[in-house]
Each structure stands twice: as C-alpha cells, then as structure tokens.
Image (cartoon, rainbow, N blue to C red; front, side, top):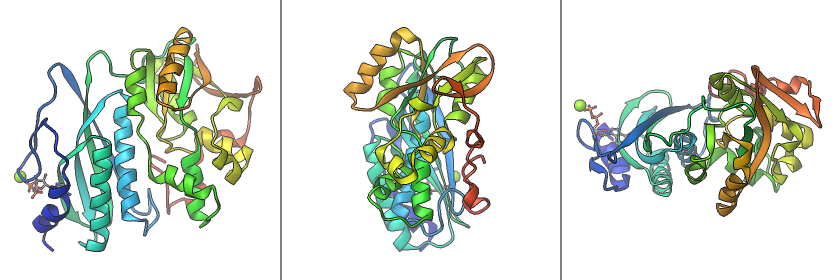
Length: 328
Ligand code: ADP
Ligand code: MG
C-alpha cells in the first residue's frame, strides 16, 4: 500500500467534520477558521513504542491514549479542542494495525469534538505524534504562573491509577481491579468541561502528566511560591488501593505520573463554587494542599513532615530503558 492510499483509506475518511475546517486533509495545508477574538492554544505530544507503551500494545488503545494525553494539555489551559494533526511513523503499512488504530482514533476524536485535519506518514520504528489545536478567550486561559499565596491546591478525579495500570500490564494481572486501572492508563479523560467551568475561579492550572509533586512544582516555581501537599487527602480509587495497597497507592498518587487529571489553585473563598461545578459534572474535586511563600513542594502526613524515599519521583524504575515515561 502506498502512502497516499494509506492516508485516504485510513485517515481522510475518518476526519470528523467541523464548520471551522475550511479545508482538511488532502492539500499542502489545512485551512482553519478560529473564532474571532480567540487565542489559539497549540500543543504536541509523542508516543514511542518501547518508551511510552509496551511493544505489541493494542493499536486501538494506543490511539485513545495518544489523543487523550494530547487533548489534556488543552484542558490544562481551559481551551476548547478543535483540530489536530497526526505524524505517524510506521515500520510497515499493516492493515491489521492501521484499521483498529484509525477506527479508534476517529471514534475518540468525535467524542472529544476534535477534527483530524492533516498529518504526515513515514516509515520507521513505531512512533506517533499528535499536535492539538484549540482556542480560548484571551482572558480565560489558565497558566502555571498565576497561583497566589494562600491559594488551595485542588485535583480532579483520583491519582495514581495510571501507574497502577502500568503495573497491571507488567504483572499480566487479570484481577477485578485490573480492568479499571488498565483503562485509566490507556484512556486518559481530558477534563475539558471541568476546566471550562473552573476557569473563572482558578488562578493557575496544569495537567498531571509527570506526577503531582513534579507538576505542582511547576506551578510553584512559575508562580514564585512553595506548595504543600497533605498526603492523607490524596484521592485514591478503591481499585488502586485494592491492587497496590495503601502505601504504594499514595506513592503512585504523588509521583506515578500520566494520570492526566487537572491540578488547579484557587483562592479559599472560591472553594464552594468550585466544588459545586465539579459536582454538577459528577467528578471528584479534592483539596490536597496549599500554596505558601518560599519555594519547592513539601509533603505532610497527618500534619507532620513526611520523609520517605517514596517522596522522590517514580522513574518507572522497573522498566528503565525499556519503558521509560516521558521526560524521565
Ligand atoms: P506534503 O508532501 O505536501 O507535506 P503529504 O503528501 O505528506 O503532503 O500529505 C498529503 C495530505 O495528507 C496532506 O493534506 C496531509 O496533511 C495529509 N496526511 C498525511 N499523513 C496523514 C496522516 N497520518 N493523517 C492524516 N492526514 C495525513
Ligand atoms: Mg506540500
């Protein structure tokens, strides 16, 4: 199969239609129509076989993870997803891989209301890049640098599940908890609606890709502040605690990475309004700490400074060099 046949067979037909795509796949560029007065939010993410997912992973799951992780960056800015491009490097043009990949990508793109408008296809070791484009009103974008002293630190959903989902794969586990955890690894759910609902209250935001300690550290540094995390407040799923035990679950919640939940800072008087936004979306939103003067991120447990080797980042050590997480 040639490059052009591959593109038209698998990608052109699955490009969702949006009114703001003046010209999609098939020309030298796509032509897109951002709403008047909006800023474009642009971000790119890459997955490499053996680095970000185990060789032989289900192509449909790879597609869902690729798009979910990329769109999560739009959520972190409170941007609306609109368009994406796909750079695909494939060792062979294998229909048994391409068909489920393209079908899952199209399905997930429709769910996320984001349209495939172009890309690039090359031969080589399996690697996938998605560049997402969204838009946000100029004064509504959430950045990492806006946190203020005394702000509360909130996180959406539950933390550590994705690291649990990786462990489940390594252990080839089939227990009751494993399906949920595997899904949390492969199917990030970008918190677009939550971010849109909270953008008028939040002072800063980031999506959790490297783990709470690391990512909250970015907000702290870029806001010129320190952050404190209260370990006992971290939201954990019953499935993660059942699978990993309470101690490892907390460690993974702190530093496991790739949960793609939102971490936001808000002034304390905004807490009730934020909780009711989350409740209306039926999404957990938990206060896990506070910003204060200084620098760095510290962890407390039941009011006492918490010192443990577990406080360091989890470098997916079991997989070093084989399956190493992003930026590790
Ligand atoms: P050019 O050589 O001008 O860069 P290409 O031949 O690479 O164009 O691509 C032809 C068209 O197909 C372009 O519109 C491009 O955006 C699109 N395209 C290429 N690969 C993909 C892909 N994997 N997914 C979606 N669109 C793609
Ligand atoms: Mg060209």
